[in-house]
Every structure is written in C-alpha cells, then in structure tokens.
Image (cartoon, rainbow, N blue to C red; front, side, top):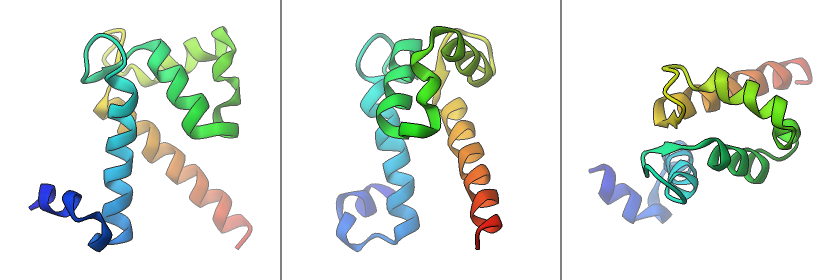
Length: 104
C-alpha cells in the first residue's frame, strides 16, 4: 500500500508526501559512501548544509559539526541511522512550531 502511494505521488496527501520526502532526502545522502542505511559525518554535513540551509549554517564549522553529529549519534556507533535522523527532523519541526506559535 505504501509503495503504491509513493508511486502515485500526484494523488498523495500533503502529509504523506512530506513523509516520503523526509525518507528520500535521507537516502539521497546515505547512499553516497559506505553503508547505504546510515549517514557518515561527511554525508550528514552535506545534508545539513544543502537541505537545512540557514538552520544549520554552523555545520561547516568542524567543532560545531562534531557536536551536532555526537548529539544525533544516539547509539554512539559513529553513524547517524534513519532513527537518529527522524529524531533530528522531529526536533526541528517542534522548534519551528514553537516559533510559528510566537508569531501567529
């Protein structure tokens, strides 16, 4: 059912399309080097800079990137898996919602 919905994107709801986009972006970067199911530090840096723009402008600073990476690497295995990435995206959504509510 999910794959059918993905294949017919023009009929998906906005929320389902957003979910597919979150997953697609993860794999766009995770498939560049090494394990295709995880993000290396370099892959994460590229994702943050290219996809999150000003939210993560400090991702190009090696010390800041190390902090971001350590915070996301919940299981401390040296990579960021889909679960870690989803936690990051969820946290960003919550912060954006707080800001949205302030200016609503």
